[in-house]
Length: 106
Length: 342
Image (cartoon, rainbow over all chains, first blue to last red; front, side):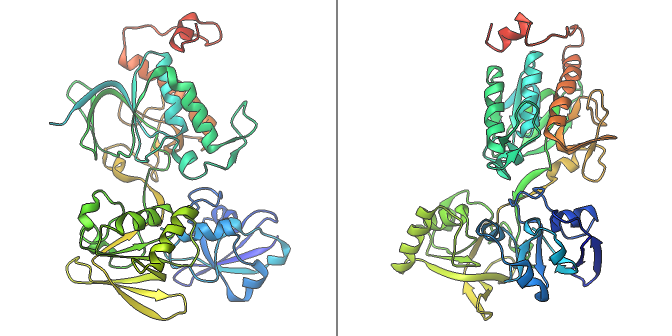
């Protein structure tokens, strides 16, 4: 199973195992990762699962779809490496992925 | 004078469970008023995923959030529930005779025999930008809604966001305010294309300003905004002079005032029993995502079941002397009359 590391806004890393085909948001919720709220449950309609993809991974993860880019308008402190974690699908190619969570989702 | 609305039941929340509660209560001759903070019915179904398919509503292999809301509204039509939208219940107290009094932020008072809390994840409230000192300015210079346009007459207004609310208020306030600046993180807008075109025309005519960036800090003494520090997309910092900021970043769910109603809470959920779905306060019931009990599943279908059982308990409380005869809508002429089909 691919592993994903979430680094919180204070710098604490937490590494979890994720299931192929699930989303990074689901991996966060299943492992009680703080700072990922996912209010809408993964429907790409709330922007409360906002994460910053680590620089080393931005190319592999890719950028947001137009719908996700629209939804990022409702997130705060959006940066070029911003993604909604419910829209990142876990696969072997993302084994070792590192994302950072913002101090506030909204 | 504040009008007092007297009724059997008040349902707090117009999501799918609140709507179906109207149906189940209606079959038992209980008239309900429904209050919701959103300006539309449907709760999360209408606000968060109106176009997303739901696959686990029994009998409906696939239905969208809005589709389910519309169907529920059709189903509960015979019971003539009254809706009070864009209103938040602020207070709930028990009267000496055991009934309840609720007050809303629109100064309405309800007096009722039972209260059904179907508040889902809480109330939808505007997202606050994570600017460290924003609290100081709220209500005085920072507003999450426009109540009176006149209040912005002769003001220099900064509007932040790229959705319909941000664009609509930019267009509406442009002729009223002294100057309007629209601030958005990118030069693309999710708002309706027509509004975006109108906004761009105003920018081209020099009537409003458009800045691409994000607010980082508010400046000005004692809650009196004077300027907003902004980080532009090229990384440089700028300052926009303004005496009002209107942030439009959508809505988020907050538990809100119900935390103050004296109910037992468990991690922001309301514990209930699974016979009546009654809270720690007799006569106050909680159904749907807001409640918790052993084995609870946050599914719409579970909320429907809870609404049915809750209604039986509520009916016994409202009419203790009346025997409830269990009936099916397929065969009971009595129920069919209530539904307007017999």
